[in-house]
Length: 306
Ligand SMILES: [Zn+2]
Image (cartoon, rainbow, N blue to C red; front, top):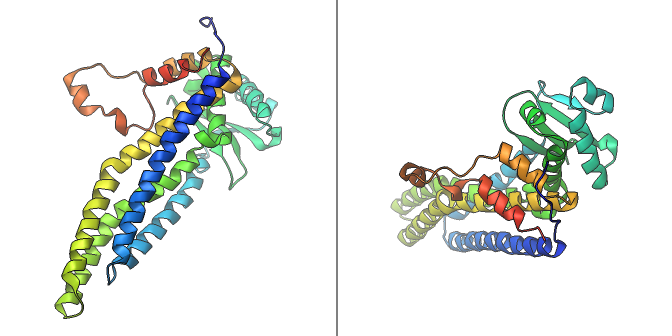
């Protein structure tokens, strides 16, 4: 039995959504601003620096956007059970999951034939959204553990969360790939720029151009991209990711009209914040995690109640 359901406030949900958008787009704007700043410096340097910059950026954008597909679909392996009908669901012992998925996907306007339920046979506490722009597969994958541990309402809440990643712009994880691309391009530059610097030294020693100034600029860029890529870039991605998780929780529950099934499910699936020992304070860094801990997710969810 769930605790008393107070109902969901649409106004609070809209406010939380707006706040989240402002935070996420603020972070994206800062990242882009940084990238433009680096770009302006590099393009003012004669020599191969700007070529390295362009190459690393284009390559990384390409790699990250190709990776988007694998994030969505290549996770399905031959060992996973694909369920496309009620009979298949019954045979796989996943009728409850199938029903939950269809309740949610019909609500979202998907045709039954475009939705697939996938069961992965392991004991991980995991659920994934499958947003198949490339292979046409939309659906949700859960593990055996999830099927056994959650009841029908909790399962519906989890499916509703995953479906929010697919249908809601504010929770769409693919949007993360853009910022991910910027940060990873920056990491690549940390390798490319020293190389460019070495080439510049060579060119300078051969007696061409005013290279020492360029060298200093490139070193500056290198230090900046290193700090950005390996330092707070990761935190930025993790931060935006966490915002997406909170939004998917809120949108999922909002559409379902219930908060407690999700909180119950999270209690079973998500790890609580570690105890406040010195070792944990030093080693556990919530700002580097893409998924928030249980307490934070619960607190965010409780905010959308009336
Ligand atoms: Zn999620």
